[in-house]
Length: 145
View 1 (spheres, helix red, strand yellow):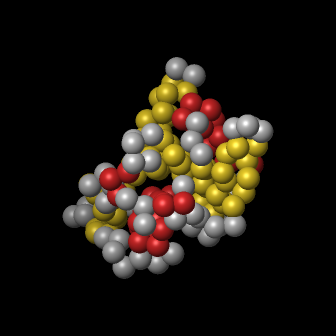
View 2 (cartoon, rainbow, N blue to C red):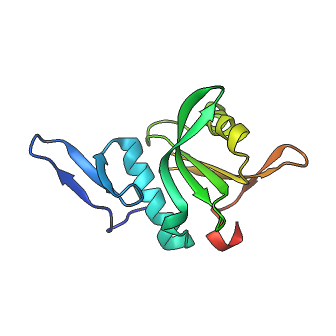
């Protein structure tokens, strides 16, 4: 997922930063943040996700604690539709990672969950009638959510 639109800079003190188009500010360029930026650009460019219906580092209240989900996608009415959790490329996408995004979903009750480390991505659609996930072969276009 390379993207020529991702803007990276080095500050005067040598810190590397990337411009987050959703938060509209420069943030530290960590391996996880690089995965996030590439994935967000992919969703916008390749799957027609509207920037205005996406948010990074969105606060979720979970058991009285504030947690941050990496990216939240909403429908056109502003209802949460998808949660995306990112890991650095060297972090394997294990059941523990999927459990983390599932905990967020216990509060948000979205239809889609994605986990990605930039090398692998898994997308699941939640079936609330059976309380089971259906893993999808690809990331759906926004119009198909």
